Length: 263
Image (cartoon, rainbow, N blue to C red; front, side):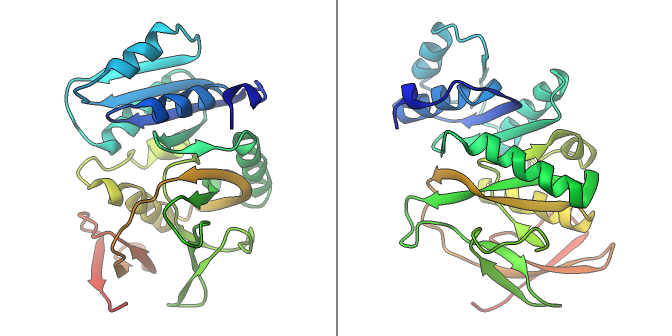
């Protein structure tokens, strides 16, 4: 898709890109996202080569802000820096992106549309709305989300069959419309977790605190999820008592007890 093909209709939402070794593909994605959001914050996580980010800065785009960090502090720190800046600018909602994520030109509008529909049902408990992710590395292409089925049982569902009543347990941060006030109240993303654990741990906190995770099936995001070894854990929250199944995470918080189960 050419950047010129995108309708230059920005939405009242702030985009946040966690960047590292920013390259030509990341540049194209950033220019595309800048056309879809009102303001875009790009946080570099201590890259040695900042030439592409400097090139982006030299373009003088009025709604793009680049933050350069001298140290590699992890994706959670980058997202937190962006989220705090967005809050200071007065935004209620942001969309977080990995630099290799490519949104469809209607993705932002469709995420906001679903957020409004969910808010009519769940009020101010709607915390995040995830897109329908097209995985470049998967044979099945579209990813499936973990959804509670019955008590103590869980299933993977495609966004096409997920309903507004479904209890979604885990989504990834990239392409996700996130309520900044809820993120602030829950203490932002955990900076002491590995990259692949950050989004899952935050989803666990949302579920424990009775917040709603939604999915917009028509909001498409092309993303490189990578080839990961899948692990599953049963996760007990000590307070309040709730049981959920998560993936790829052992929480470092004492309120979680994780027991690995066989796939």
